[in-house]
Each structure stands twice: as structure tokens, then as C-alpha cells.
Length: 360
Ligand code: SAH
Ligand code: SF4
Image (cartoon, rainbow, N blue to C red):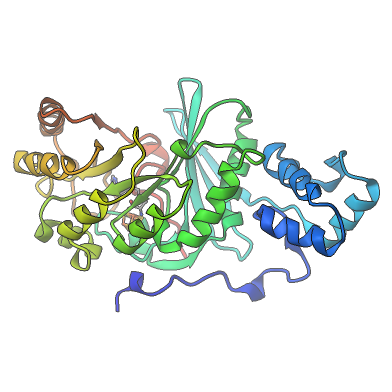
């Protein structure tokens, strides 16, 4: 059985302080349950939910809309603990990569990318990744564990605070950091519910994107949620032989099954599936590939991102030439596709696509 066909391990709960429950990561259901037990009215849950996720308060004494008595009671039962940003590196292009220390001492990375009065946060869903893609630094780590919803939301809160991201400034969230989000769908969707809730961070669903290597059962399951984030597929190769070589997941769910799952994915009227395509010299950079990308993309509403391969240390792969990359882009544009060449930000700090890796 392949690593991704098993559930990824969860956090070892012995390492969580049992006596201390963290309010960060609790959704309205859990808060309702707590206040119900205490005989408090249900609107208290909304007040606490808003305080944590909307106002980003990190101390119970800041909850001035609650009585002193209730604040003290909350402080004895629940901590408010955000993940710690251990190390933050600023790239010359304005992007920042942060290393987040988790409660069990493990680490993940996340990236803040400001542009034109907006920002995109690239966040992680797992420590490591089970999918083993040959071109990806995270893949070389193997899977360590799933992140909790609290740890996924925590990356957003911690970066918003660090960068003083104004509450009214549009924020895009992409689950394109470490891990395969569809291999940890439950926690990812719990986190999404908090990020999206109008009383929480109120991030619209269309501003959240889950990127997958092609876990077909996960794609189908994601389509059953409403609201849900947008979907991106890391296509990366255009024949089963080539794709299986660089993405082992393709040996289980090949291109046919993938396109069937994408064709039946229930899209909204204005929605498209993003196809990400890492262009690697001599592997995935031919005009034949461009033609097959176009054929694949024509099967459902889509847009295409061509990503020049970011070279990793000790890797056999090389980035494509600028000429070939641009030719592929022009060909796809001429065939009527919405296409962009996405030059990764944060390359000088190891924060670009596929560069996120942490020694275990
Ligand atoms: N596991 C998910 C999301 C995280 S990877 C997925 O694979 O979709 C985010 C993106 O970075 C993917 O599209 C992946 O194909 C791309 N990527 C991985 N390694 C890369 C590299 N070395 N250079 C450029 N892009 C890379
Ligand atoms: Fe995992 Fe995505 Fe990297 Fe593949 S590209 S190893 S799925 S993080």
C-alpha cells in the first residue's frame, strides 16, 4: 500500500498539554458545546469566536465584552496559543518565508506574498508529504503528520499579526505549502470553515485555493462541501508515462480518471479549475506537451499556470529555457486559454514553489 493510501498520522495527543485546551482552532460547534455545559447563552460562542479570529485577541483580558468573572473562568479552562514564528526571512522581492514551531516541536513553513495592496498567504497542511513527487523538496521528507485545523488557521493568524495585515485588505489563501491538502481534508475543511465564517476572518471562498497532486477520492469529496475552496490541480505532465515518473500518485489515478473527476466537479457559474504545470527542461517542456495541456484543459472551465521549475540542491532536473517557456505560454494563449507564467516569489530564501523543506 502506498503512503497516501493510508491515513496520514495525526499529532501524538500525549504531547498536547491535556489540561490546557487551545481556543485557537475551536469552531463554533465546540464553543457552543462548552458554553452550553456552563449554562451560558449561545451568543457567548459568537463573542469568543469573533474575539479570536476577527479581532485577533490573544489574551482573555482583551475580551472586554465579557464579564470579568467569565473571562477568568475562560482563562482557567482555555489557553489562546498561536503558533510561534521561529524564523522569518524577507526576500528581495518582498515575499517573506516563516518557519512555524508546532506544539510537539515539529516545524512547517508558510509564505507571505504582498502585491498591489493585497497579499497571498501560502500555507501548509501537513508536516512533510506522502506523495513523493520527484521534483519537490517537501516530497523528499516523506509524511510526518497531519496539521490540526488550529495549526492551519494559526499560520494565517500568525502571519496576519506579524505583517500587520490590515483587516480590510483582501487576502488570498493558497494551500500550496507543505503537504497534500486532500490527504488531510477533514482538518483543512475545519480550518476553512473558521477562515471563511463572517464572524471569523470572513475570507470569501473564492479567495481560498486548495492545490492537489490528484487524489481523485479527495477531489470528489471536496466537491460535496458547500461552501468550499477553489480547486487547483498540479498537472505537471501530459502523458501517463511521464506523469507517473515524476508523480507516483499517477500510477493509481491516471490522467483519464483525473479528467473524469474534474469534469464532474460541481463548479459555480464563474468558477474555473486552475491547472498548475511545472515546466522541467527535457521532461515537460515540449510543444507536444503544450498541445496536450490544451486538450486536457479544454475538458472543463480552466485556467493555466505555467511554473518554471525551481531548481533544488542535488536535483537532476533543470529549469526550462525562457524561449521554450514563452513559446508554450503563447501557444496556449493563441488556443484561447487563460494562461499565466508564474515566476515564483521568494526564491532567494527557499520560499518558492517546491522549495519548502524542513529537516525532521
Ligand atoms: N501538494 C499540493 C500542494 C503543494 S505543492 C500539490 O502538489 O498540488 C505546490 C505547487 O508547487 C505544486 O503545483 C507543485 O507541483 C509545485 N512544485 C513542487 N516542486 C516544485 C519545484 N521544484 N519547482 C516549481 N514548482 C514546484
Ligand atoms: Fe507533496 Fe505537492 Fe510536493 Fe507532490 S508537489 S510531494 S504532492 S507537496
